[in-house]
Amino acid sequence: SDFWREVQTPGVRRASTLLRHGLRQLQEAQLTDDPVQREAALAGAVARLRRAHERAPTDLDILYFLAFATSQRQLVQRQANAGASIREAIALYESLRELDEDYESESVAFELGLLYTRLREYTRAVDEYERGILRAFDPRTTVSAHANMAEVIMLSGDAARALRHYDRAAEVARQYAGDSLSLALALWGSAVASDRLGEGREAVERARQALRASGGDMLVLRTNGVFFEPESEIHWYEGLGSLAMAEDETDRELKLAALQRALRSFRRYLAEVETVATWDRVVARRVTDIEAQVAELERADTSARGAGTGRAGRGARAGARP
Image (cartoon, rainbow, N blue to C red; front, side, top):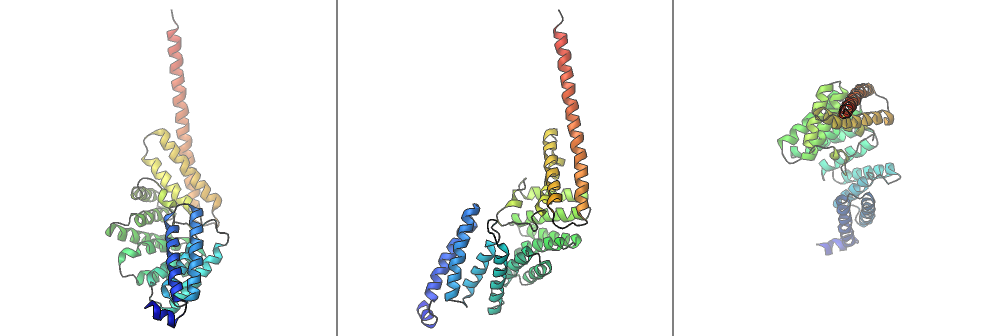
């Protein structure tokens, strides 16, 4: 009972209360889309869970949620020193493993995969995702791990291997209906991996499938909890999405607008990319091709407007005859 636990380990009752309060604030943080409110709720959750951990240092539940709340804080863009929170969260998860390596082992591995990705320690991130997949009891829980591991592998330079993991993630997500977010993200990732392999038409088709799975737009790419490392990656995703929209558009003005969005995204990727890679040439070719398409559509618009003006002028002169 709590009474005897309190007798044996003073502070346990207070730790339980702090855990309850910390979890309430953690839930508030996950429910809000306001970054300021999210940051405040996470800070409150970490403070309470840290105090609970001080009173009950071997309580696995407290340690797990303290590690989770700490890792979530580094996703908040307003936080100045995310790196410190990342390393603190990693240390907490490692402490949890030392106490009991089987406690929430799949979730711990998944979170460590995310954290090592943020530190750009890609080999360790892949190791953690593989560990989590091996420890999963239900294949449905591996979709995000396969997709995230694919992203890390792609960042390491192996787009072909990444594509296999993206396809595996999509396969599992389709097999077990209900995880539309994971399916959409896996399809988006597969589109970029395919593009980096030089599969131009196939990449656009994959982006088209991703759009359908996302409800026809790209908002899923900027959903709370979805992040890209490095941040410039998102522009390749959105560029392909806009290109797929343009190819499906029959209205000339809407097609032109979609192509211009694609052009802005690809140009922004090239401007912001931190490490030059061989596949950047793919984006450069995309930019050149889209510029040509945009120029052709703009010339067609100019010609159409000119023809319309000419017809109007002839009509005016004809109407002026006595």
